[in-house]
Image 1 (spheres, rainbow, N blue to C red):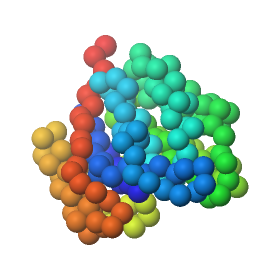
Image 2 (image 1 turned 180 degrees about the vertical axis):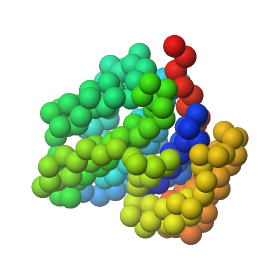
Image 3 (image 1 turned 45 degrees about the vertical axis):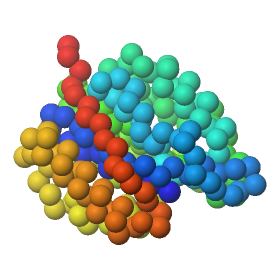
Image 4 (image 1 turned 90 degrees about the horizontal axis):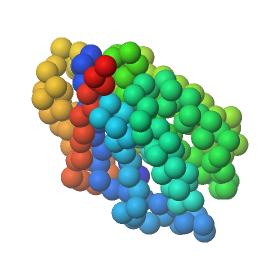
Length: 195
C-alpha cells in the first residue's frame, strides 16, 4: 500500500511518499514491513521509486541495481540498466504479483521521470512522464493525488514551495485514504548533477 509523488520545477525534483510499507509473503498474505524502501536516493540527482505488490525476493535484485548505477549521473543510462534488470532478472511468481519501478532524475540537466511496470500475465510497460510530476501507488490515492496536483503550477515554484506543495498533497491523500496509506510523509530533494 503506497503513494509516491515526484514533482519538478524545471530545476530541482522533490520526491515524497507515505510511510506505510507492506510486503507480500509467499502464501500471498500481506504484512507491514520496515525492509521496504519506496524511495531510494541513489545519488544526489537520481532516485529509485518502487511501488506495488511484490515478494521480498525482489529486494536483493533492487539492492544490486542501486549499487550498479550509484555513479550514473544521467537518468537514461540508469533507466537502460533498470529495464534490463526488470525484464530479465526479476521473476514474477504469479498470483497477481506486479509492481512499478520508477526513476526520478536528470538528462543533460533536465529533470524527468521514467518507469517500468511489471505485472503477472502482461508484457513489461516502459513509460516516461509528460508532465512536471510522477505518481505511483495504489489506484485510489493516485487518482486523488492526480486531481489535487494536476492544476498546480509546479514549474513556477521555488524548490521550498514545491516541497511544501508535494508534502501537502501527500498529507491530504493520507488523511483521505487512511485505511491504505500511513503517515508521516518522507521527502527528498534531488538537484542537477554538476558538470
